Image 1 (spheres, helix red, strand yellow):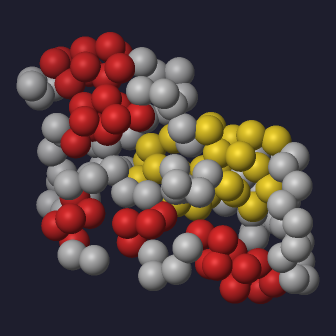
Image 2: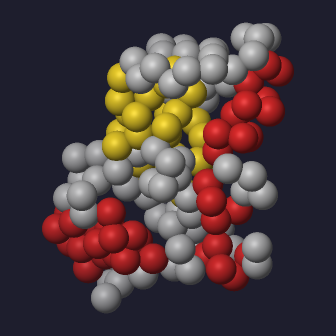
Length: 137
């Protein structure tokens, strides 16, 4: 994938990965010492997606873990191959498109989209107001 394309979207797993999230997890889960990936997907909770530096991410909810992975709205599942916990359903906001459009107006520093961040609870109006304060139309 071309780097320029990645700057024109808020990145999800499918934008940059050669393999699906499930395949990536199945190939790497055991490296964390957890053995083979559980064969059945049994959802144990939900995680809210957020945007960090222009990437949709899901963060492990286990205290002290700190792992985060690029999420994908087409397959919104998460299992942590750092601490071994999961499966979780990743919840994307209903205003996903509007949030992305506002964040994509924000400039990059070089090729780094460090100002393109969103956390659950921030509204579209809050992002628009922040853009306006920064002189971004």
